[in-house]
Length: 420
Image (cartoon, rainbow, N blue to C red; front, top):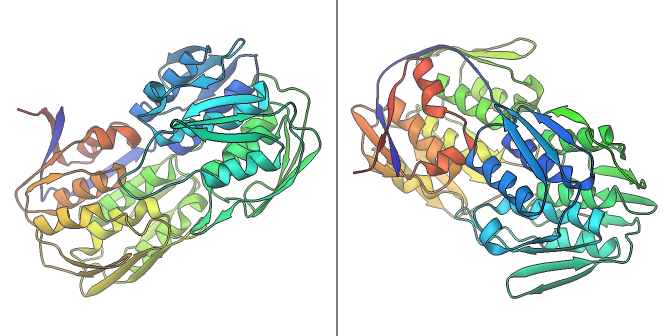
């Protein structure tokens, strides 16, 4: 098992290119199951999560080829059963339910299990499938959905903490081959949902309204193969912008869609960091001492929950008291205890972290608990005095392509070593 060592205090400067979006790639790869014709997906990041998805597609009978960031999937003959040993490593594996139901009119997919950042049920996914006419059973840890035919319906997918992104994806993929018109109310507006809709439309689907709270899908008889390039990863872009804020001279993030990260650049601007935005590049400059602020995570276009941990790392050394509330996953604060090991002063009050900025952090042995928490610990290590040792970095490899190498390119003293 690997761990990452960060020798703190080195200033970052220069530029890096953002990889393709993990959260776009996973449902788009799943959507290739909707057609027997080959699909070519470009810009797929080299991550453990994308590897798992390709393993699932292969298990289902698809022919998969990968060359660098380009993946070709030919799902001519597929099965509709994905057992636990195939899906257990990744929650996003549930997004094969929609395309399997749409094409095969049945699917059996094992529930992938819990998540350290909190309970993430798929009730709304199943409610959407039932509205389309599918029978749904959950037994023995498996979800079974089947229908003689799917028929368009009006479906509301807004849940307790806002719209469901994967639920919107799943229902949209099932509905493209349903008879009639489906209307998804309370749809997720994330850019990754729009990217999936664009991919499906290229395949011959008829989807309008992606990126709004109301998506209209007119079912079609069949879909065909396409080529498509996934959008840049906005969370990776945001993570590197925060890295530049924490200890950068001037860091430029290239191959980014500025509108996709507007909430992040707005917050960094509120902290006092100068931001320069070009067509597909964003630069962040130092400001002396970062200002404290109040931050609330919200569904897109609000501030993303996937950037909450990274901002906690930045605010741990900001001047004053900051208050961070996560309205999406109130339990997503496993990084707080680890940051406190590095000298951060943070207190939890329910789903809110109250952060008293300190003058400096100190290197320590810390443990990653989930994907974004692990990124936060690496960012804190860049700022800390001494050496920070981050274990369980397989979490990082789920969602960041070559994070340590890219930070090294910016001047960080960071290395990946084997655990003793």
